[in-house]
Amino acid sequence: MIMISAASGALGRLVIDRLSTRTDVVAVVRDPARAPQGVQVRRGDYDDPASLRAAFEGATRLLLISSPEFDPARRISQHLAAVAAAGDVGVGAIAYTSFLGAGTTATGVTEAHHATEKAIRDSGLPYTMLRHPYYSEAFVPQVSEGELTSSTGGRGLNTAFRSDLAEAAANVLTGEGHLGRAYDFTGPLWSCPEVADALGVAYREVPDAGPGAMSWLNAQVRAGDLEYQSGDLERVLGRPAESVLARLKSRHTSQAV
Image 1: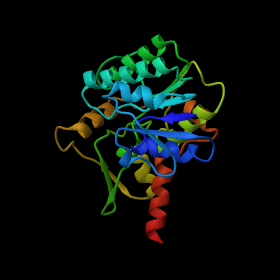
Image 2: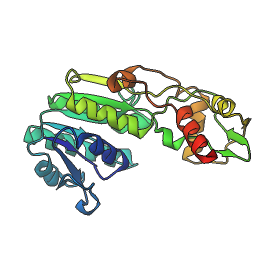
Image 3: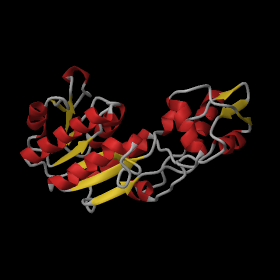
């Protein structure tokens, strides 16, 4: 039986949608009232270790979706509780939604993921690390008045859509040959000037609007930190991942009809 933790979130719902026609799947959620429909539901709260042990009982494989908590210390505590619970009840294998760079870096965005990967390895449980990039949904540029603007310096982004990452997770959970591996998932590299050119609109670089998460992310893009590429996502999917350009072209075409 495959169990998906944090299953009420956007990624968890997509994974369950892709698994529900393949195998028995259980949604593990903090609030059962918010659980996806049509599957078995168990209550499992990252802040309640006893609930996690009860929820994970009988799991042949567990997709441990990372907590949405921003505070690294609390996030690490939550993840370690989940890993300990999985070990206590003898979960068959863990697939964990980590982040690119977490295997070697333990600062900033990767801090909690690095600690969680170590805990999973130390647990002795079979595992697969699914290192995600940033989600494309957060970066898809918008055309306004025939113009596309950004503060990315024209550099490339290796983002991927949740739909592809969910399908890759489902393939790992139901397939063979993935245990003991760490996958670096990256989408097709794209840039805002390329998108503008493909859509036939003007491109203009603008300064960041001010401090905040997106300004910090734009700085990472301008530094080239999101240009790393790996073929892991395409290999696990068995097809090319959807590009931001393809998504925009599809949206642009549908709006024009």
